Length: 249
Image (cartoon, rainbow, N blue to C red; front, side, top):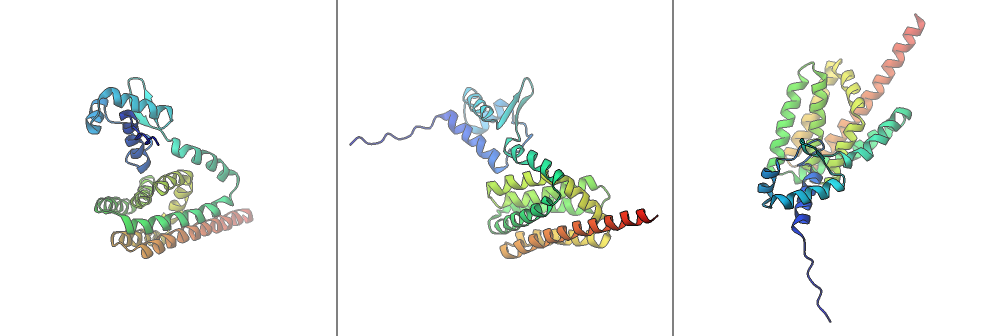
């Protein structure tokens, strides 16, 4: 019987796998520009020709794109095939918003639970920072910044779950519902009491995760999405009443 030969991993494949891992875990995000060839080769401990070959391999897979004289960038391939069709479907089928919220509740509850269980000190420090930013911008009237900070907070939780699919699905989902989030925040911002409730919910999720309480984190995340669902219903009822009043004028 001939013994099996050990699998030989080419250096180029090893480098490509390392870059691919960074894309999957979110260390490299869509739109990010890779470091210079010289700096990246030093970081990875490989020659520049090996790095170029590895980058070309990921370009052929659609994960990276190169611009002549402009560097190499991470593409949105892992998100685009999910985002584009669902954004169109949501426009044409409003009832999908309900299903989307159910999915978001399931996803974010699990993300918060896993983050509370798995978050490292580095994850907690990052979460502290994004939550501090969220608190600061929520005190302002800049709704565009509030939306960005809100999305960043939920994405930081997803990435602290240390589940690659949760991280990418959350990023994709936030792109799908961006307009949905913007409308809801605008509605809540005009109601100070409810705006404060929203802030309290974010604090509850943040505190449960940093105290490593998975069950409490999952419940806080679930309660938050339920609050969002109720707020959307209230907004629809308010708009229906406004339209009714206009018709009576």
